[in-house]
Length: 134
Length: 134
DNA sequence: GCTTGCCTTGAAGTGAACTTAAAGGTTTAG
DNA sequence: CTAAACCTTTAAGTTCACTTCAAGGCAAGC
Image 1 (spheres, helix red, strand yellow):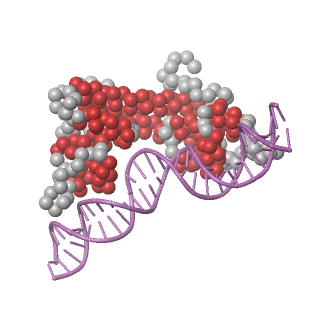
Image 2: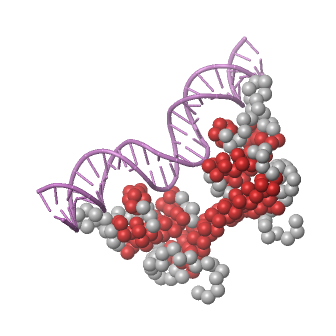
């Protein structure tokens, strides 16, 4: 598949695809006789997964570790699955932290009366939105 | 309150406090006779809210809009509350998008059998984790 | 009164993740 | 055959959100 097609298929700019390859996130893509990139199915899988993980907020650095471990032929599929689970859980934790902060904001909104914003020395004590009892 | 105290109270570096003031996120903090910053209660409220919103992932640019609208004396408290609700909802949407991406990853993990990663032309069709029926 | 450590300012530097530019080769339409 | 629209590479530039630096003023301990 051409770089143009891959770019459209996964909604990632060609420059980004070249960048990911250059830094080693993507493997060296084989070139056709004219020196143009020709993406294999496996290459596309990687583009897809890197995109999903970047979307979820994973850093390039964390992705490096992940792809290197995942690609290694020494690793079993069980281990690969475990890697995926770990990455998923670490992303989940971040999202949960953000959710807590937003819940706190919600709490402040619910108790936003005629006073302006004030922090009342509460610091960041989160008030979970679905907690019983005010 | 001194910059040092504010920095400790809200766990924000002094450099960041000065930066937020310089770009206009925080109002001009008044100085004492020696030219040192002296934060008022209202200044501290702003430090607190900017920190909460940054924590939740709001960009500096979005915060600019928010603080400008919020600060305007022409605006009612009802309007201020509405602004908070809007910002909260927009943060919530982002978190939900991420959550979906992570759910998709979870789905892939649950269906991760003896094949390696592959995208199977599924594109980003999310499989909500708590959906009935596989 | 001097040293140490805090504060001030403006300007320059950093790191992450791209993005754009420059110079040139290839393919395709007319 | 040539012009437009692709592709290639290396290198430099951009954006965001800070951080660090440099040069100097203020304050507290000995």
